[in-house]
Amino acid sequence: METPIKPLNTLIEKFRSLNGVGKKSAMRMAFSILDMENSDAYDFAQAILDAKTQIGLCSVCQNLSSEEICPICDDEARDHSVVCVVEDYQAVIAFEKVKEFKGVYHVLHGTISPMRSIGPDQLKIKELLQRINNDDIKEVIVATNYTVEGEATAMYLSKILKPLDIKVTRLANGLPVGSDLEYADEVTLYRALLGRRDI
Image 1 (cartoon, rainbow, N blue to C red):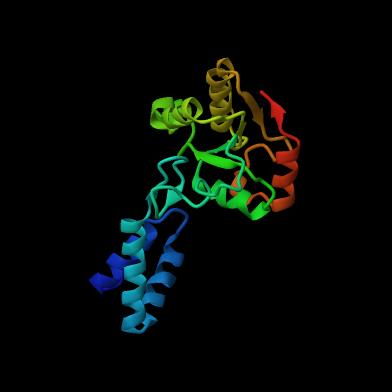
Image 2: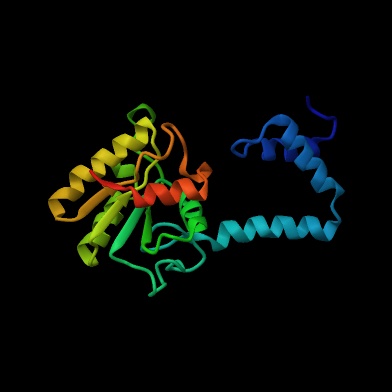
C-alpha cells in the first residue's frame, strides 16, 4: 500500500527491488532511514556509492575486489596450484569461514542453465581456462551447488578440464541436494572438502 509521500514510496520501492526483500521489510528499512540523523543517512548513501564505484572483479579469480588482484590471489602463502571453482562470491565467503582451505578460488558468476538461456559463454569459464594455461594448476575442485544447474556445470567443467591432464574433483555429497553453499555450516563444508572425489 502506497503512502501519500512520493519520496517515501520511491525509497520503499528501491529497497523492494533488492533480492529477498519483501514489502514489509522494505517499509521497515525505509522508516529506519527516515529515523537516522542526516549525517548518518549521508554516510549510508556514500557507502552504497563507494561500494558500487570502488569494488570490481579480481583480474585473476573474478571474485569481488577493491584492487586489481584480490587479497586471496595476492597471498603467497596460499597454494595456487589448487583452485576451488564456485558459483558466486557468497560461496567464497562461506569457504573462508571454514579456515581450512588453503588454495585459491575461481568465481563463475552463475551456472549453466538452458531454461534461463545461460550457457558456458556467459560464465567466467574462459578466464578459468586462461589461468590453467598460464599457471601451474594441479587440481580444480568443482564446488558448484548440488542443484540441477550446479551439477550440469560440474559435468561441463569436468569434460573440458580432463583432457588438460588436471585432477578434477567434486565436493563430497555431505551437502544436501538442492542446497546453496553459502547456507552450509562450517563443519559440513570442511567434511565436503575432505571427502571430495574425482569427476
